[in-house]
Length: 366
Length: 246
Image (tube, rainbow over all chains, first blue to last red; front, side, top):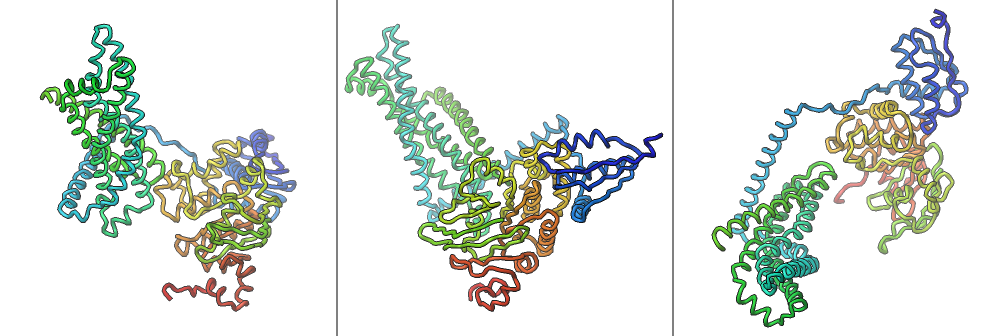
């Protein structure tokens, strides 16, 4: 074979820098790829500039060629480039980067189940510990952080008033309007007042208020506690003997349990206003007529049911928000993930619990 | 290479820098020393365009960095890299992606070459290649720093800014780090700007340094020159005489 004896010269010339390296790759591929049992000399004489990417590209080829039993010769190399070449050859690492292979579906499934079980246990543990600290702080009221409770009541309760007002006003008005239109066919459009009031008091006002609180507070609790977890603040508290449950979680739980009925009461009142606007302008009812109608037909139990649900909703939101916050681990991306989860979870559980209560209350006739 | 002219900075009536000027030469390892709160980090952040320059000018590559347009800004960012104190790795990517992301974004090299470069840089900073698939949250502080250094070196910058590179490393790793920096300076014609407290780094690595004290430059020059000054304040920095509670 003629090729076997001939020596191949390859000139390394010009600049070998990462932004213009692609043309050199084409050259290399054309000239010295897949050559076996040969002698190749790299001539560095006309090299002007080379950076680490260029050197590593060369080393990549040199390794490949050596594997193919080629003899490599490097000529006319400057001292500095020789040094660079030596340094990077020493550190060169050929690695085929593989993405993680897909795991067996049964493996993933069982892992999912085990994970779920572990998380469930973790949640039980969290709730248990919270109960312990709840009774502990009830026995020792000096341990309750009243200032923190007040602060969270302000943040979660008062700043939410405008949005609750607008939402409930519009919802009650629109519901009553739609109902009045439908009932007009039967000549019953006046009845819409007590119908809407009942459904608002029982279901809509507590539930929608709770969803707004969940969107605002569950997410902010998760993000706050999660950020504290990442910066080791929570660990620092533990080492100082401050239980995070007492300082961080219980104030938030207390705050929401206290403030939720008040928010719901406010929402109820705004609903009445919305209905009254509709009654006034569409059904031309006077205020005293409106009030008498509600007084005569809407029993107090509808109002009470909504008010009784409210603290439970507050509890659900606070617990899920704080629990997700404590789950944050490692990186900042987990804060984002768990914040999303906490809002989705709390809304989901609000719906589930609300439906159960709704069903039970109808069966027992409350 | 870098010229800092008459920089003054005030935060809430608190004077941080008062008319500071110094030059950093080409291919030099330059230190910025000073006690905590002496404005070293602010100065560094002003040089790398993260903090606005209130008064004075900083010229890098003979360009006033206050007056860069969008393209010049991008260009200059490709020519320097910064090693932040705690690494500042992207937490959503694993180690190898953290390093190769710069090459993927800024160049059009083939995938396998990019990974070869990234793996070589990992080995270069003294990490095992098994760390490549780990996430930053699984790394220790020292390892994070090494990965961050590998990321900083991946584009062969002309200027390397290091914010306390050896803090949190064990002594032998710190010395290895110093050696690596010296080595790279030779190989790659780097200029290195270091903020440090490490006495050994100051002694063995820095060509020149400034000491910031009370909003002014207390000293400018090399280690030998600093020792000759026989100034009590300078000695405090260089001879570890700072004792808590004294």
